[in-house]
Length: 88
Image 1 (cartoon, rainbow, N blue to C red):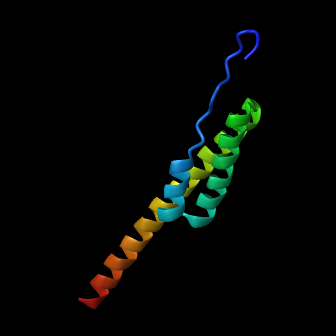
Image 2: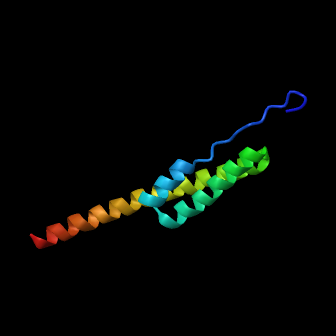
Image 3: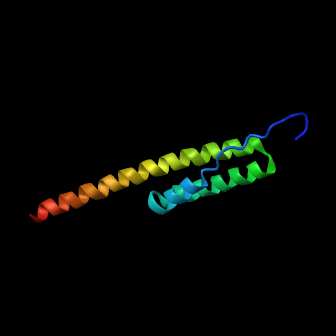
């Protein structure tokens, strides 16, 4: 680093992306993994602007995937309860 510049390392959210892919929303999770890897690679190369943009996108995708997963779980539980009540 020349001139006392410090390199900012932004979070990649890779672990969160993988968890969202497995448990919440596969398509959004995969997209989040792609952007997480892009952020991680840009961090390693010192490309802070690209890393920040990819990190922000990965975070947004992870939030949306998590919300979709929660909504999906609520719908499944509601359907199970509804089907159970119809049987009795």
